[in-house]
Length: 357
Image 1 (cartoon, rainbow, N blue to C red):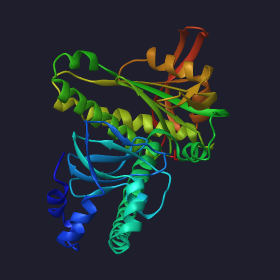
Image 2: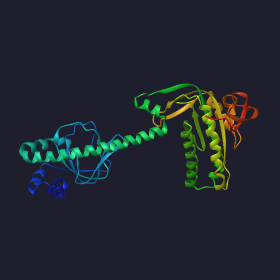
Image 3: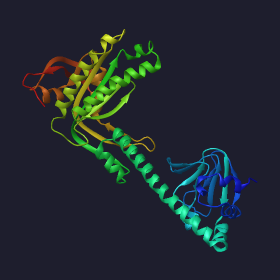
Image 4: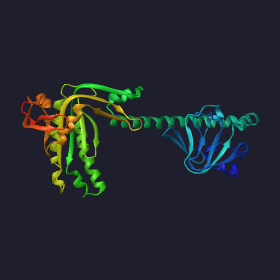
């Protein structure tokens, strides 16, 4: 059994108490040893015990959010002394150590047998609680902002708003969107020559440029798969210029890739495919939510990339019709597309002088 009077006298917590008062309080405490990662107090339970951390650290955790850490000389469960209340978070040992514990029964005894000391202790703990509540609110606000940032980097803002409103299933049909698939040709061979960190840094640099272009043209990045990039225009908020916006991004993506050639021993080229048509978008998954896109138009866009040529932008006849007045094209002719048969496709060359979006 640890010598509680000596231990707690060393804590700033009791700097306003004299030796006799500390000795009296220690009579109502018992020493409790805890193990690393042990749950000391559970969320939802009535907070019956007051604890003073003597050694080791403990965490206050709400779900996966770390609200606060209590170190030696600090209090956990102080609301037990003020009033019996339901715990709003778990108290979990961050490392093995000891607590000086005052049970609810002993708290009531202290109030009855030494009311002056109990009042003084309650005032101290009330002030401590208010400070911690303020710190907790700040911590929760930081976590909320962090979560908001993460969500908006995973989902469109309009989808984030609907998820926060409690919608479990989100699925929408869009009559017309324009889908772009891009693949970095030569990246697999380059991956064999570079260190992992250099490879990831390069891919991150390239995709970060693509992300900036996505924002510039008001498009929606759907996902990356290895060294492939998928983006769509015309959702989640329908727009009239989705085909033009995607065309502009495709042209700038090719220009950006050419800037990397002088830096690399092995050349990289971008193969891009574009298609316009109807699609369904929605959120799927139970753990790692994904905002994704489905439909025949999506499959055809993927085929346009796969059957394309490095350094070029291949588009379907549907996309060509929407862009031909503003952009320059070269007819490729008919190609065999799996599941679709022969399709006439075009190479997007650039924008006409009078073209604008």
